[in-house]
Length: 191
Image (cartoon, rainbow, N blue to C red; front, top):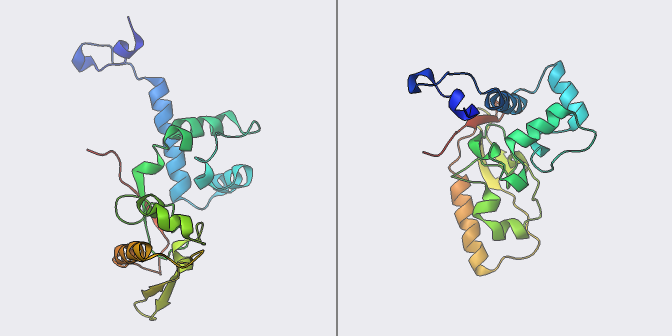
């Protein structure tokens, strides 16, 4: 009898034994999620010191010095080569703009700005800037973003200026709350 049949539910006439590999993968993915939403605690400090920022996890397949647990975490959550399925399941909710990368994080609309506006990303000087770095604020009680300081390598062509207008219109609709930190929101599967 095949293992996948044994792991099926009793309701389907099978034994209902938990698939340990699938269960382990789910627990590893939960660890990555916890790394993203928690920024305190001894375990978080240790992982930051050992491996650096959890957000860089998808960029590489790991180092030979990494622990088996960390390598499994990278394997389960995917990296850029594997399609990075995990990072495509959450969106950033911008509050103060200090954690969200302006171009590469998904924080507005249905995908990251570098995917939606690749030409503007290509000519941008601030590819790694955070949302808070390229925004200017006004007001004390209810602060609001009044302008965006996106720096360009060169003067934009007319058709690129049209793209810039689109991006500014898109990001001007974002609701901010500078008294709180940015946070991750689980979006999950496309249905």
